Length: 150
Image: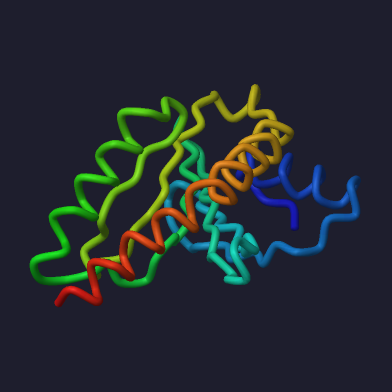
């Protein structure tokens, strides 16, 4: 896959050189030459979807869909309070609730396309995986406890 998206080409070359085959690739037909890479992280026996978006801009978002639907009702506030605690604790990434109520872990890597470092994506995924291995069970216990109260 070679196109005018420099970051996508560098990342694909990195994957090829490392014989990494777990990423799906989707090229968008837009003015920014967007290419989306998708994979999963296995955490706590679950496959968490990961989306990594490259284009011609400085921004390169990487998102992990941690929980498909956050608890509703009275328990929601305590889950949101815990998510805010995580956001205050960790500097390199932030959590947010999407429009469809999913809990998303978000990182935005920045670099001009010519200086994009695909190794930084791999390192970031490693940091996220270690973080989620620690926090995912705690988060899920919090969600399950709050769901049981509803």
